[in-house]
Image (cartoon, rainbow, N blue to C red; front, side, top):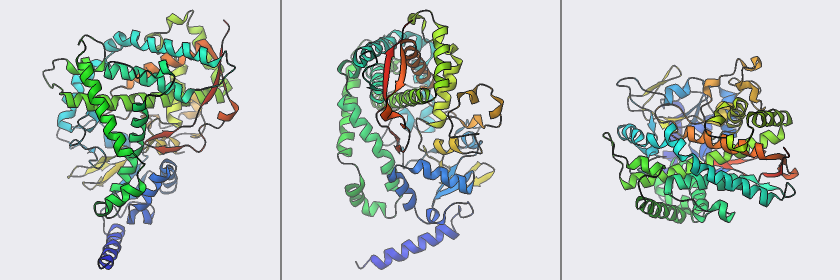
Length: 486
């Protein structure tokens, strides 16, 4: 108790410095957020930070101070200037070490600039057009199983199915096979694998840990913070997730190398970089988590928006069903011709971005020029996709689902379409972007080819009130799938 006055004085002094003397004091934003990291942390814990950040940008503009040492951007140039390709000798706005630390995570996503480029080139073959063509039979086998299960479990449209979980089961089985050499058995068993559930729990805790690290006296009070505010069993689950990944990769490494998956690409001899087992394990864990959940999320949201907009459904059904004479014609190559489907997916990822949170960057010691302002070194830079895509200055009718905005409709000529980067931008953008698009197009095309879809009444307001903890906390999406007559 003797130290309480000292702590109080320190806290008051720190707040005064943040408000009036900090290098960011000239940037607009709520004073209470500038004085302390606590309001920002509380918004993260509420699960509604994406909505709060949007309201702050609506009030204060394209650049907002959202913490004592943090800025948020919704300006159209922000992606390029924060994350874009660098000029010769230009310092990188690297991943903020509070959130991604190379010391503990050896995956591609946490790699330093020096390690990232060679490592990414070593992995690139596994995501090339040729690799995806080789992976197509494997991917199709899981989609076949998915279609069979929908017919059987949906009872000819009489029984609604929760597509939130069915999409997750399908994408996890696909990405599990491509990463670990075998599926999780979700489609076979009609339920989630325990490792998948633990992975979700671990990922959901990430933004909470990030928020805690920004709170006053974190190092001093860390044990109390974790005991009172962290989800139960999160640390235990994290250890189990890591152990499962290690064992799965060891098992995969014992298989023949001539297998068209991600590990084969990582094991290929590369003159620039050879990945070790720890790097392969950590990277595959990231691929499984990020590469499956985001794809399943977009498919679920697209299905909801299609069903909730009859004219969109009619137009998409017509495009798919006139494009093919048989289901076998739906291939990786042919789905690239479905232009309206691509517009539907892009509009889905605009209004309901699969990664709605900010993946923070930090300015180098020399600082960085962003949106015409010099930002001091060590400043956290946030790009909240939800706020960027829902701000009226960036998109006309931002809350409305209108795929035609991506097809030359002149009503939307003023839209800042270049700001739409659901897979990020620059040298660290998502390596699996093309694979994700192919999976989404194949799965959606085959559902539309096989079924007429109808939302169950209890899913009519599926997107309403959803919270965000790293990913969306999605409710059940109950849909009736009636086999269509040809």
